[in-house]
Length: 433
Image (cartoon, rainbow, N blue to C red; front, top):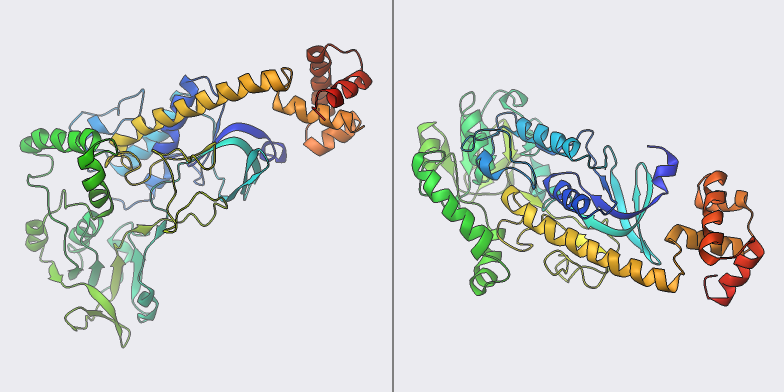
């Protein structure tokens, strides 16, 4: 990507090229709207590829596809994390979605009538921005973790790939969500393992079993259709379910016990460089894996779009106070399923439809108020009216002189004037300058 791309203005920029961002892109493309997707990873799908090596999705392939293309695997199989990453990459290619990879967004703000996105690869401007960088961004680790003895290997679950990263000796896995249970189950094959914390329950059937094929569609229906912001029970129960730990799905308590994993109370601090449990026991371990989740980080967004709790103020992903700003993939954005694969497509369709409707209204207004000139042509005519030459205009807008000349000819035709002088007079007379 060169500097010209970095200063170019787009109708819509989608920040995040995961399942949420790609789904919005798919629906914008169907609406015929131009857009660009920015993703920090080197390859589309790397957010999945970077997870631990043995991870398989918890939802079967029949629910893992994005809009327009089912996941290419048997319906009741469970894809690996690499297969999911490859699917997302193939999805973007299949629908020719414009994705710029390797672009790490640093800030989002507004200048006048446009949003400004700064990144390590340059600056982007947009009429609309969809923040689709996920429900979680930053690993959450307790502050006292830094007090652990330096000889103890510490990894967050987002950094864990496999047991080979760990040193000899015991392992303490902190957090009994699905990540914690699966990682503990894996490392117990090679290391004495303790698992700290309490689970949030378990699904009542064996994962992947025949019984699960009957139960899972019921859970999906409840999370997708019933527990939404449109239903009374959804508004009451949905946030509690969305923000609490997920029940154990694949590795259950009896599996942990059979693997010889010691269950211990939660970790409350550090003493003499070693972890201390709630019952005041000290664990002598050589490794700690923090499966303590993630926290949302919106500090890079410099817009008045957040409440006192730091969470986005939105209506089903649409920020009414900042027209043109949208969020995707948030917990309980519309339903309990909004932040997971089965739920992103519906939310994406709604947001893309809103963007298309807003663009249509804007185009209609601009056609009336700006005499048919495009936003770029309006910028050019204002600079022409200011007495700038084509070379000067090219420098200001960071485009070629040839492009400026083409814009000037279009302007003369649309305003039905024959010279730059006449165009200048028209611009002042009609408030375009």
